[in-house]
Length: 65
Image 1 (cartoon, rainbow, N blue to C red):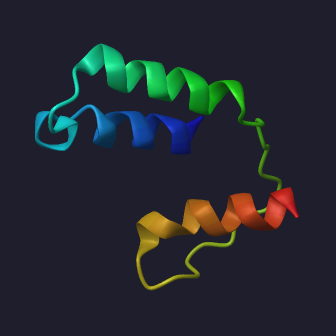
Image 2: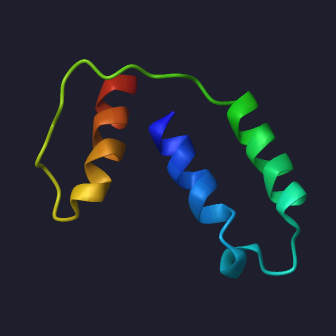
């Protein structure tokens, strides 16, 4: 859910909406979460990457196989 929350926060910024409305962006997020799979992390790989904000992506990739 942490990654989804980050995607939502970024997508709903006014400067990222462009010509879309917030409800249109929310509809896209609804589709994204409906096809997503919750992945628990059992091991933390931190620090691992040059950008610490990307470590979560690495952890999800490893945990998801």
